Image (cartoon, rainbow, N blue to C red):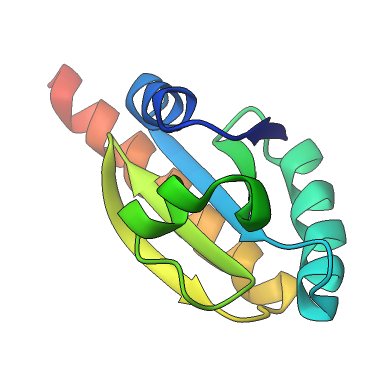
Length: 116
């Protein structure tokens, strides 16, 4: 999972990758700490399917403002550069995993449709 601090790096990532999970967190936030370990685990398992990036909210005010991040932790899923879904607050691993599987399946189906 790549740590992002600038708008340019963030924009590059969401445009270069078909699906991106961006994880906004803060080191002082206990739910963020718990979420971080789950997202890290999932990033190693799903690195072939989607891109994972992390944003320390204390170091990236401009990004938080741009995406209206008010609750930590926050997971924002992007597809082809556009927001698909934002999940506010701590999320259970099973739910995140289910959502990633759903998005990955959608991406595969869209690719197959494009080849017909």
